[in-house]
Length: 226
Image (cartoon, rainbow, N blue to C red):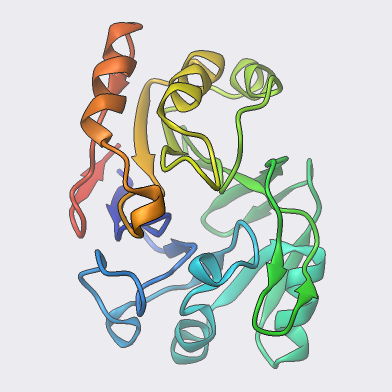
């Protein structure tokens, strides 16, 4: 059994039998997060890209837990230069870790460390295969046709998709992404944190269900199991 907790924005905590994994752990400046970085345990932190609302509290959590950061090569090298344990990957690459497999996909967005104006490689989506379950965290992205290929090659149990618009897919494009991915369940993310991405997840749920797919709106700080 895998336990998945949503901490708002694009931040998820995934707990397997032996490991705790964080994706994009943005807590401190996330008005919807119910936890503080000091309260969070992690063996691994996976980053989709370098923007501040996705790196978030990575450094503090990694230091507190001696966690390994998994990210695209340039972002990984930056983390190593700052003294953190990190494993770099490339788009399309897959690697087996003690908790399962990580594969990075394309994502149509950007990736820079704004505070230092540094380019940090390509943004990424994340495919996690843990036991017989597959989770797809798309990262910040617009809709792209290769989502159909991702869905054909991976039996996706849970797709975590942005719906906030402006910086990423909006609701209608995210619904099309659900269709392309042919996932079992869709979960909306990257909405409601800031005014510019304040869209309605209930509208997304209605539209996903209208194409015969399942959607779960995860309350902040609460978990589901798959």
